[in-house]
Length: 92
Image (tube, rainbow, N blue to C red):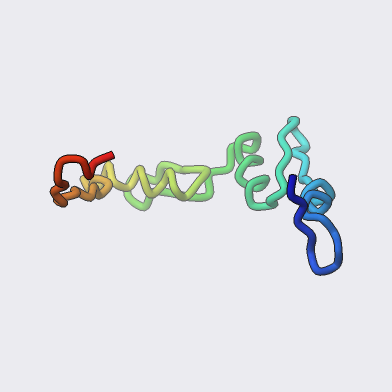
């Protein structure tokens, strides 16, 4: 078993267990990251800060708005096609 220590002699395991967890006031959800807690709380409040400029539909997360915008533009996520030909035995 390996233990990793900081310059101050504190183990990384001690840092991880002592890190401040943020508790949702409405449920049992916890997170170390305040940004994740902010996103989570939108599930309870119904806040949708990201609005589509075409149809005004609201979204809790920006990634969902970006995905939705493709319904208006017709753009599809890009796909990369591999054109490299392998000799027999090279593909594993």
